[in-house]
Length: 114
Image 1: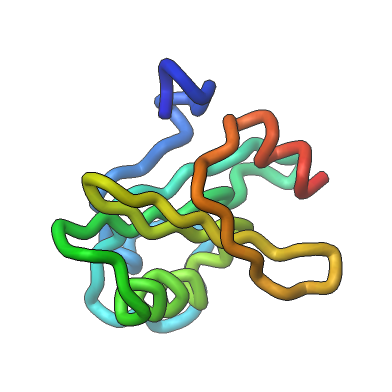
Image 2: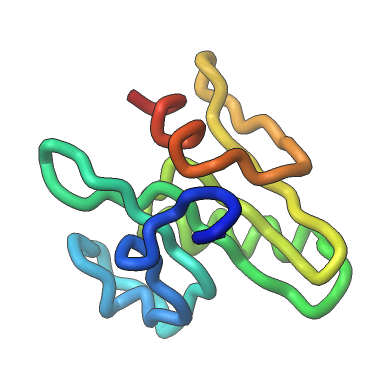
């Protein structure tokens, strides 16, 4: 993600408790997310992309897990991944989540939200 897609190392959190994340005001379950990438905005850091990593086949349960975490985090993009698959979900202009099977680079993700 850093070398090939331009994500900034200092804007990536790995294996963090939901309750330890900045700006989480809701009471959170005791859960740990795998990867959370931020972007810098005029208002400060905002969650950009949350990735849930799995050792098993990706399924609806994995998607529900990342969507549940994102309820607290509010990242613009959600993804699930394993060794062979990667699925990204992002909101289209009508507010519905669309699925794509690749990860755009950092600048592409940022430019799609601003």
